[in-house]
Amino acid sequence: MSITTVKPTGTPGGKSGPSELQGARLPRWSPYVIAVGSLAVGCGIGLAAGLDSRMQWGLIAAILFVAVSYGLSATVEGTRQAKDRLATSVVWVMFLLAVVPLASLIYETVKRGSKVFDGYFLSHSMGVVADDEAGGGIYHAIIGTLEQVGLACLIAVPIGLLTAIYLVEYGRGKLAKAVTFFVDVMTGIPSIVAGLFVLSFWILILGFDFSGWAGAMALSILMMPVVVRSTEEMLKLVPNELREASLALGVPKWRTILKVVLPTAIGGITTGVMLAVARIAGETAPVLLLVWTTPFINTNPFDGAQGSLPLYIYQQYQSGNQAGYDRAWAAALALIAFIMILNLVARGVARWKAPKTGR
Amino acid sequence: MAKRIDVSGLNAFYGSHKAIEDISMTVEPRSVTAFIGPSGCGKSTFLRTLNRMHEVTPGGRVEGKVLLDGDDLYGSGVDPVNVRRTIGMVFQRPNPFPTMSIYDNVAAGLKLNGSYKKSELNDVVEKSLKGANLWNEVKDRLNKPGSGLSGGQQQRLCIARAIAVEPQVLLMDEPCSALDPISTLAIEDLIGELKERFTIVIVTHNMQQAARVSDRTAFFNLSAVGQPGKLIEIDETERIFSNPSVQATEDYISGRFG
Image (cartoon, rainbow over all chains, first blue to last red; front, top):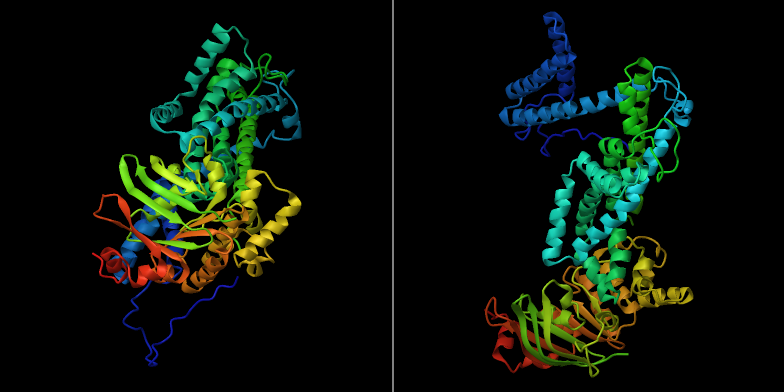
């Protein structure tokens, strides 16, 4: 890739100098200079006025940047270009404002979490470690979260997929409308309510014990509507012409759905499922009610309390000493990394499975 | 191979709206029958009733009889899937399956139905692509995606896909309306070859095309917007275009319509 710049050439008649079509323009590098300048002035004002918060420095710089670009452009280029610059600079400032919390969250988590985040931390439990003692790890919590989320997926993904297929491909009339309505209602269920429901039904009425499985059931209630909604939208995007083309070949409807509709939408469906997983992996409330917690490694999700990452973070933070804080941050880092890896996998699958357009 | 279609007293509905009314005609085997008429007169709807694709549309409903060599397509116990295996269809816009390669697109009818032998598949694909005059253009890139072809090639790919399942009848719903004149010519030549083996019904808005490719032409019309479409007449193409027996046909063909 080479960048070629097209220099404005004179008119065919050989007339030199700016034509009527060319107006006065600010040089290309002007936005960067204005940005650096306003940042410097913003910091200067902040220092001079003795403002403590770096946030205020940044805000002053941002406002300066927007105002200076508009004013400069209005005097040199005219009002229409000035409005264009105003919109562009507002978009940039808003983008930076949106990125700041995200970037600082990741920075903070990595900085504080990496202190105790190592192979030992990932491969050991809290079994014989006292709260205020350094050491220990999250192995038991990773096992618990993986099993609970995995079981929740096993319940929620098939039900969610089939519900979405019913709604898009078969559903007509009252039943479909009712299903859509209840899926919408389910989307709004607070996680603690899902936890309470399973608690009263599974543990109090049926008399089962706390277990990862009970937590997985509550998580699947939270996951299902997300899967249904995203899958439904993806299936609706599949052009009807493809269904008709397949049906016209004498392919039965169920095979059309399985072999034509689902493969066409599989990238989007995978992304939707991964987003749903990301949503439930950080849930604390149902886990607190249903799985309880243990510092020991319990690999059997059907028997007794299990660890889990969100609850581990909460407990370590609650212990109120430095060793606990370090472990909490490291566990938060592990949770973020887990969800990020899932997202990357989903993007990879989506790209790999996306309908191909190349020649 | 080719079979004849006898239609008698056919009505088709979308919900409570009657789209076509009381159509009776015969489609001769090993010939090309063209449907012409203004937009909205029910040509495509009628075409879709011939392989039971009309009922795929929500609210789609059909009354009357369609006999394929004497067997009623709408008789009780008739499986629409079997009907569609016998009567293939090519659509207005090329619609190759985007997830499949050129090879898989042609083989789709057999593969998706699960009844094929691997050894036969290569022969079927080659034969169908040759039948659709596409083999020479794609034989070196059979495993490339079908959506990478040009519009005209995609439409011929769809024709290859339709003839790969060896139907008795091929329905074509304005197959050239999205194509340039050269691709149109390629497909018209193809129709001329295919009629040796199949019964072909083609819907077209292009009167010259109907005159060029068809043996018989049917003219459809509707008395007013919202009224059901009707079959005005069906006759040898030459007669329809030189000396039609109904005044409305002559008006439409000579451009004096409306």
